[in-house]
Length: 105
Image 1 (cartoon, rainbow, N blue to C red):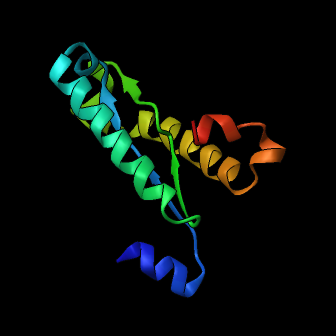
Image 2: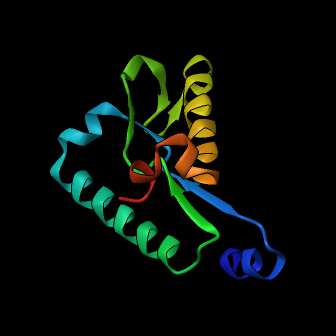
């Protein structure tokens, strides 16, 4: 539905992975799941040029900086939000930012 709305009304959508606990990447089942999520979001973004998959690679954080497995504490949230904002700006103008290859591998 959001994809159709973005086309109809001419707005962009930015999809990003949440921050995650770094220990999750030690689990093979989680890594398999994460790759499937990446593939699904890549395909979703590939069907509509208004959908942008930013922060494709996991933003991992130490346990003491996490509220739970996918929510960072407030101080870390500031860092994550700044990173997300840079990724969105880069997606808006990839040639100027030099980040085009990072956003759509």
